[in-house]
Length: 426
Image (cartoon, rainbow, N blue to C red):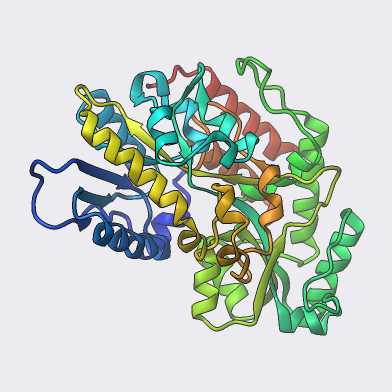
């Protein structure tokens, strides 16, 4: 098993948050209760706390508790154990990419769609691509809160000097490998160091985006066989290797280095998820954001979505469930505040609202939402899961020069096959 790689939330949010984040007034009594588990540390956690404070102030009739647990495997392990024992909280956060691998029919309770509609939330309020992923065996098991795609950050002063901004002050879109490389070369010549910062120690999102733009397949239709397209997988890896060999990106950079290189101007671009917007705003950087370039054939962008789920309870209380669904609806309708942290709201009435559209640069990449590329469905895939770790172990060598694209692909395929041959633990 490869050594563990740095994870975004672990780096930024601490190894264990664990403690009670916020409670409503008093202890649980005859009031309906809503206990919420989430995995939001760092800036996301602080923003969620503010939103929850508003919810509590507006709902004195609900006994509300929110708990933040350590991001990634620790969160999902604890959530699975609580659901298996039937003693789970009323509601929890779950990455949509992990829904099917979480065994929803045994570990989750279906969302009562009649209560959801009564709270003013309907299927038509969401993108079909997102909503349909929340349905398993004809039942709704998750309600999407947001989407968080792989995007392009750009330093506006550096890109202005590099001649990459249009008359509107926004970066001019590029399409195709040659245009992509020309853009990076212009930025590198301006910074004198790198063109872009990228997490080379775990480049899953970079590779998955490029491979997706090549329309590469991953599993067979029934999910039982690995059907990677070697030619397309290698094409993406070879481009990643070229970026490092040409000095356009660092040969080695973990997640904190990715952030630092963009912050201090060593790189004029950054390839990352959209969740660092608050970091760069706090640093008072001259920056904006845009969709990641369409380097290959189709617009696809690695990403995921946070959802609300109802973990399995042995004796789910009707009043608590009604209050919980109403809480979910309230959060969706107030998701413009959540979007300030970078995430694209899933609830379309908020996406079209002036409150959201006025958020800059957060609204600049909202167009990619229909083309977010989720991880392949498997018990070992999804945000923070083993598949991404195996990709990091195999593909980081392509950037550092310690592995050829062919060797990296062979290592990744072997590791994926081993996981595929291992029965799901849930």
